[in-house]
Amino acid sequence: MQRISAVSVVGALLLLTALLLSACTSGVSQSDFNALQARLQAKESELAKLQQAIPTPTPPFGIGVEMFDASGPPAYEAQPGQLLAFVQSGMAYDSPAASNFLTVVDVRSRRVLVQVAVDMPRGYQTHGLAVSADARWIYLPSFVGSSRKLHILDGRSLKLAKTLDVGAYTHHADEGTYKQTDRFILVDTGNPEHGQIVLDPNNSNEVIGHIPFSTVVGRPYSGWSSPDGSFAYITASSHLSDQKGWISKIDLSTFKETAFVPVGVGPVWVAFAADGKTAWVSNAGSNDVMQVKIGQSRDEKDQVVATVPLGGSPYGIVLTHDGKKLYVAKKTYGAANSSTSVYVVDTEAKKVIKEIKVGKQPDHVFLTPDGREVWVGENRGYEISIIDTATDEVTGYVPMPGDVHSIRFIEVSTPSAGTAPVSTAAPTAPAAKAGTVPASSASPTGASADLIARGQKTFSQSSAKCQLCHGEDARGSVGPNIRGKTADDIRYQLENNPQMQSIKLSGDEIEAVGAYLQSLPK
Image (tube, rainbow, N blue to C red; front, top):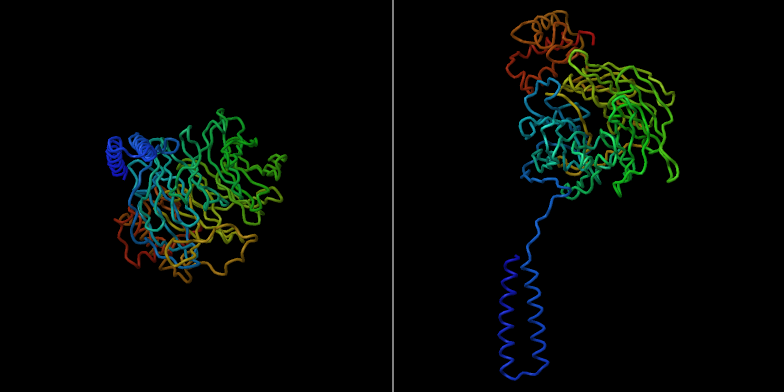
């Protein structure tokens, strides 16, 4: 287009020059001569502009961008009103998975709709997940020192659409319940110059801002938006590991720090109350959670108003919609001493009221939009444990091929898979308790002693490899604790887990092993 315009201007310039020369020799009036000369000067000016070098667009903040063809049919079917869970699972924490996986689960039936291996370079490990409010985009960070790119998938085809090269690892993306995912996506990076980057999901995920390390001063961990989307709250630790950290409050209209709130040692996670008047922060270094009162005016400062000590290292946290209970993942590292607990904190009494047994190394906790369940991502359990918020009991599990870090819930509002989900904002009050437990998590009724005995025998046979991987008592060894698992769980793993596809069990053997595992106390 530019070259054609230049040629046309040159042609006009030559014609005007010829006319001007002709005018000089043919005795035209002075006014006509002046008009021709003015037109010639205008064309000369236009040509000069076109001959200037065409500027090459520079990626925002020096971030490299690469686009991919993500076209194709929807990878999963969904119906209006269907609640979906998007689950990231990776290859860290001794994971048996040979790839990074993205899984879409029907929340109410707990049935896997689709599971795909993510197209990532060798050595990348997914660690974190974000989904835009309309499920058009899925964001997958990679928390490995050598990785540099954020991968963005098309939410319909689940194919790679775009990568952003930030020059360092990426960690969390859009964590928490009250994020403004219809307006922007926050992504942690390990690049001090970028820090938190802010993407616009409505404009091809353009980078619209960033919060460098220097803005928050210390070592930032992750960031969350306030319920109204005006501020980002970024947890940061001191460079001295035994010193208290703080929350840096960032104005998202200017990307400048407006205040900081001193908290405990090693702050990790922030969870806001729905009304935006309070928030909670987990402090992994000082083994406590703190309640922060949020200033409601320019002159009122945010400040810590309560501290609840815990018996172990708190990590991911989430509040119920009414703000009365806080669920806290207790995370300890290492295969030998992995924790298996989620604390329940009464936010009014300011004390722990229950410790719930889950799988190995719970990392983060996520509340369903209806408030009925908390889904627990487990790093070493390679599954999701599901907690009923009315009873605070585990009601089921969803097996995953690798370590689970992040989960996102989206409710579908149109028949097309992922085309226009409704907002997942929390209701003002918790919904009523569901009346039934899905069949996949229910204990088998009337399992005979003979069936259980046959299951135990199959479990212990070396050809089945069950005992070799999961331990004599099924409490976990190389593989996770599988006590309480069902035949459906076993069948799913045999069909979908690459590490188990060499194991051959008949339908009767699967039913027997399921009955045996269900007979074991959890």
